[in-house]
Image 1: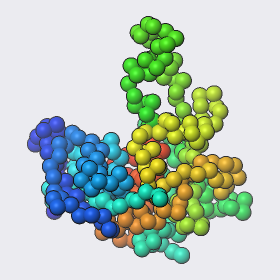
Image 2: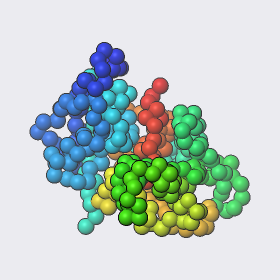
Image 3: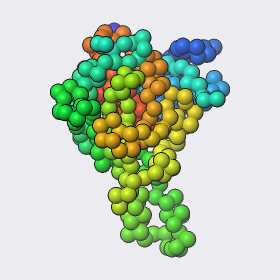
Image 4: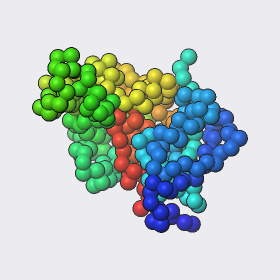
Length: 98
Length: 220
């Protein structure tokens, strides 16, 4: 079991592997693993999911029982909550009223 | 009812108390930039109670669109009165004029068996902010969640202990998304209990612009 730490390369160059997992009745993506720059904000992952699924309202959370603030840096999330070389991001539908 | 129920996403009043104490201690240890959360012992019947009460975080500045926007934008807004764009004193005055403060309370809902946020905002002169004024300065991400998600919406309710009207995020959807958060881990019952409030606040905090430090989620 590895605990990833960004010690060897500068934060701005580091790419993080994100694994997007559908939960509940949310649609499953054809491709669910992506690389994203560690210096990007989590907002980028949220917006990517919205575009791929054509949904504005998604509930996005990680495997440590919390929903990250969109301002968090992907590298910080990966360093603290990544596992096996990737950050698992779960998503569920949070349907609008109507 | 005892324990955190991961099937329903709810928890007992006793476990709310335990989670609240643990959460506030961790927050106060790790978050030196922010005021402390304080537990106020109180029972609905008016008597002091050992394990009933609510958490308060008072006079805090939250993430807002105005706080995050660059000063140049603010200056352009007000330049109708003043063509000079480099008056340092004016910039400082304008910025402090917009510093609104908030009181956040976390209480237990005996009806829904989940925590509930009660909050109020104040202008620099102490006047209460209306709901429209609060919504105006929420970060855009918060506004989106409030407008589009069926799980989080704001209403005005009577504070369960202070009997005054406060704004609140209605708890009816809380169980649904707490279920998802709790089931994302392999936490046993004890850890689910301890992590319940941080998990809950990670979502509720986003709706009002309160950032939760990542340390609260790290299992150390």
